[in-house]
Structure formats: structure tokens, C-alpha cells
Length: 415
Image (spheres, rainbow, N blue to C red):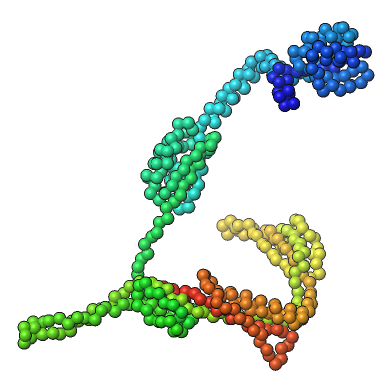
């Protein structure tokens, strides 16, 4: 069907209105002579609409005369008719050709350049280097040597480790990967001190003098690895003037060396938390319903511009946002734009069983203990227990303890 419609468009076809008393005979004769007709529909008594190819119009005139019928054209479609219109409108054809040629010429240039993958390097630097290599806005896309652009960017920007240039249509994309530059740390003398209390489990010294060992209890700020390293003991040396030609005297002690201590000190650390939950809880909470209004305040008088005129809630909380126009010199404009937001609240009373309240209190205690944990740690154990009082007052109380193993060392400069 598609090929048939395509051929009909290429060779041209017409939509005709056929009238006469012998329309059936007209159709039968046309079919018997191999003339293809389609989209046949009745338009009334002795009238039909029919489509046929342009080449069949002349034979159909003879058939119409023989069957005492007549037809008129209601539409002309296809390439021959379009070409005929252009022949009559040569300026339109010339304009279309010029437009197509201009569109092709414009699509042969690079009009957009994107830089991707850069984090530290500014895109202007990369685009400027690419322009020096021949890739710039307005460059002929077929004349851009992508390999040359990549090589020049790699050569002139040492922070780039990879460059890929792709051109799609009028857009060029420069994708880069930056080198990971590891800056040398300023190795100033420093201790490794404890940032929190704990029980030392492991000491690994890279640089410095350890001051704690496994099993020691440390407190925050205590030195774990000292940056002050004592010089080795002085060796005895012979000084002239003794009875045997020299006298052995101890060499003077060398001053201690100051280094940037480094190492890992892992310790067991305990975090504690507390949580409680009443058996009967009363209070207020938001229902989820909100309302707002915007008003303008001029000289102390508020005029509502939009939103609710009257607050639709009996109990609510409100938030107000006030915006004022900037002053000019010493003149203050007495106009304010005020936005009020109202949130409905309600009273509630919730009764819990002892097990439900204990679960809530335990969860709160563990969450409270976890709040103090930060960084990469290994949780060794979690414990929780109920706090039993003589007068519980309808409240279930829990404490929780979390034991972790973590690196507690932090560097501290030696002043």
C-alpha cells in the first residue's frame, strides 16, 4: 500500500466527480481496460467520487463519452502538479533552491561548541586552545582535524589526561578528563592526638614516637603519637690530652627532632543515648491542611491581593514573610509585600500499651546514641535497657550503648 501511494504521488493522481445515469457501466468499462480506480464513494444519486492516476484521464474521457457520463476534477495531487506550480512561479522555485543551498552551506559549519568533563579547568581555556588548533565557532566542519585538536590540547594543557572531539551536525563536543594531581602536604611538625575517649586496641606508627599502647585508656586531646623524636644516645669519642694520647668522654647529646607524626590508633569507643515515651501522649500536631494569602501594606493598612480573606482554621500556626522595596538615599518607601502561610493544627491524645511505648523509647535511645557516630566506624555491639524508677509517672525510659572500633587519631600542629 505504501509503494502504491508513493508511485501515485510520483506520477500524479486526480480526484474526480463522475456524474451520469450509467455510472456502473462507466466503472465496469474502466476496470475492464485495466484502469485502476480507488477511494470510490457515493456523493448522491448518479454521482460518485473516484481517484485515479493522471495517465488514466485521457482514456477515461473516451469511456465517459461512450457511457454518456461526465466528470470534473475536484483535486490534483502529486509531483507533476507541484512541478507545474514551480514552472509557473520561477521566483518561488529559485527562492526554494537558494534556501536549500543556504541551509546546506550553514549546516556545513560548526556553530556550537560544548566542553564536558572539566571540573577545575575553565571552559574558556579549553575552547581558546581548540581555536588555535582550528576548531572554533564558524569553522568548516569538514576542515576540522579532530586528531590535531586533541593532540594540541593535550600538549598545551598539562592538567588534561584525555581529550575526545566529536562533531555531530553543527555542534562540536570536547570531552576531557582531568589529571588527578596530588599536592604535597606541608609537613609541619605535628602530634597525633585523641579526638575522643576510648580504650586503645591497636597502634600503627608510620612516623613519630608512640606514647600509648594496647589496653591504655585515653581521653580527648591526649597525645597518641608524638612528633618529638629524641636523638639516639651519643657515642663515646676520644679527645686528645689523656694519658694514652686521648681521653674518652661522652659526646654531647643532640637536640630532639620535630617531625610530622603519622599513624593509625584504633580504639574501642562507647556512645550512650537516652529515649523515653509516655503511655498516654497529648499535644498538638499538624493536620496537613494549609492556606495562604498575599497582601500589600501601605502606610499601616493591609490590602489583601490574593488568597483567603478569612483564616479557615480554628487552631493554626502562621508564618509571615515580609518584603520591602529598597530605599533610595535617605528615603524609605512605606510599602510592604506580606505573604502569610497558615497551617492547621489539632489536639490529639494517643494511648499506648507498655510494649509499644518500650519499643518507641528503645528506638529513640539508639537513635540518640547513633547521633554521635561519624565517619567510618565498625559497630561491635549495641545494648539497650530500661530505666526502672520507683515512680515511673506513666513514662517508659530506655538507655542505649553502642560500642565501636574506630580510628581516634587526629593531627595537631606543634606550636
